[in-house]
Image 1: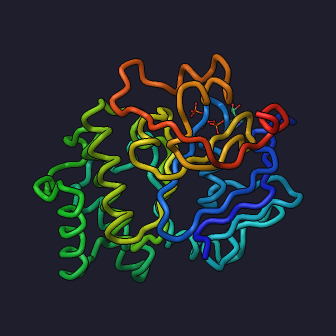
Image 2: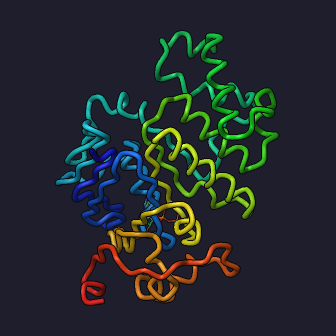
Image 3: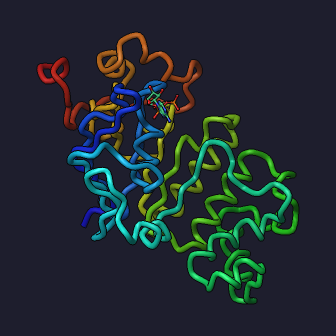
Length: 279
Ligand SMILES: Nc1ncnc2c1ncn2[C@@H]1O[C@H](COP(=O)(O)OP(=O)(O)OP(=O)(O)O)[C@@H](O)[C@H]1O
């Protein structure tokens, strides 16, 4: 069954379409990359799937598992409950800098405990233990008692992943989680996402600016162009030539000048859009 389903989702800002009838489906346990040039709609789409933004009033549907997050521009009454099962990781590390790393990770249990306990920061020994285990899973248990502000960017992203683990998220939506990181840190964050996808079966949808990471870590890629799905298929199909066909000159911003991972040529998948229908 699909863990994430989007149907005919559109979003306009001041009359300009940021999302144009987007439909996609991510099956439980998949790790899927979302790529596209700057302004193609990646962040907007992820924010809609996460239930943080409402689509245009007509037609758009977002479902997480069997539950409707939003439909026809309205959030479901239980959107807040559905969000508990969705971990969101942003490009700009969204930890509370002055708090200890473990406290940031414990924020993940807030949706599952009585509000008064969360407000007072009263976490049980078992919850603290779970936070430590999650930090260990992402390889930074040694940072648990440091202030979040002392972590490197990559460590902060891994702490955010640990928070999603503690949250017991079934789906992780990561919005350009490696965009601000050096290549070594980016690799570690992508490896961490791939590991929890493989070992815990967590569904991952990750937006990426560089196609090399999509090829290396995500079996499948969905490519957006001007707010619409332009390609949906195996990441191995995304050779430089094909990207040029998809994006023209804009493809250059999606390819690292010193690509760390080499593509394997293959050409399947679903092409969308008038220009590509005959490609
Ligand atoms: N709150 C907003 N108000 C007005 N326009 C917006 C808003 N959010 C996004 N947009 C517009 O929607 C389009 C898609 O933006 P979005 O941030 O989703 O693209 P992106 O693919 O994530 O880009 P980047 O890779 O640069 O982060 C852009 O034209 C952007 O200017």
